[in-house]
Image (cartoon, rainbow, N blue to C red; front, side):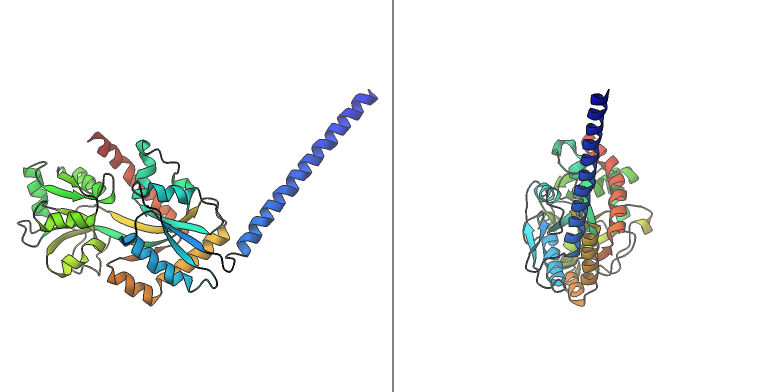
Length: 337
């Protein structure tokens, strides 16, 4: 009995030591994380800003404008835009999701594109919404519907009447399956009982060329891609897919004001890998907010036709969740087609 009692005592003491060691190690890791966040950013260490598209696109241009302004308020550190194009943003988003959550790698998550990638089982994405920690929204580039200046369609009603009279005959542009333009067409068809002949293009430039050349009837795109042609009088904008009108395209009514609640945009915000310390997230959120209020940032973004709309981490997260719920049923419709 004494020997058995001694074994139990030794076993209990060993367990106590293991538990104590576990608590100590946990405290050390927590303290290290707090210390790293408190010391962030380390002077001389670069911060990588991943953009999942090639250089020169509107997201890349906006990213470089933002990085240059933010860098001024981060003494001793450099904000470096890191283009990782491929697979319709999937390569860049995968790199961001797999990055160390220490604040030295952040990146753009473009909505709804990010959402459609991880909701589509065929894409086999290794990330989901929970893989990212929203930091702040920079741009919400609302969708628009446009026709040529000499088009017989003078209003949105004219386009819808024609689409109802001749189902699948009115050619409409989109820039990629399940991209924001394609989803906008699906929304409009669902709400109005119309059916367009959707023509997919590899970007907004070729789809605009097709519109101006008379190869398609209706252009679905974003404000940032239409401002030059609108100002030049080459196109007629029939409606903006947002809750409010845009100063970049004065006089163009929202679709909601015309009785059709279609909301669509290419929304571009910065995110960090999940698990990034709150102190670091708050640091970047403050830096973004300050940069977006900067006159230089505002001027350069307006020149590019990009609508700045700041959201803090909580608002961006709520916006993301709401958009995911809007996108999910539209993806089912797209798959059926």
